[in-house]
Image 1: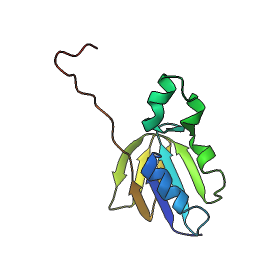
Image 2: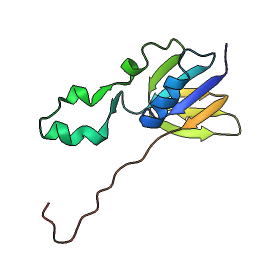
Image 3: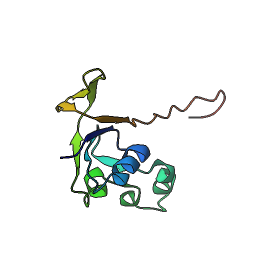
Length: 117
């Protein structure tokens, strides 16, 4: 059994790391609070009916379906205990040898004075 890699976040970075580790000797656990990945740069094309929602959003499990060594857990992270090498989530506690924190960012659109909302 290989070393355990826990990846927090299944956005661009988290999925990229998981896919790079696919079918290697590592045991990979991918944790995210949502069960789907959204390619946000194309959302405006969904809003203008240029693309279908299924073209910019897909299940995370679908993205890792060909990797026998990757497991997905739908959960919120509650605590990271670095000294003891575990992550506590709403789905339980997971030990790791390597931890990848790829939780991304959350856009915050500032209100522009004078602009209609």
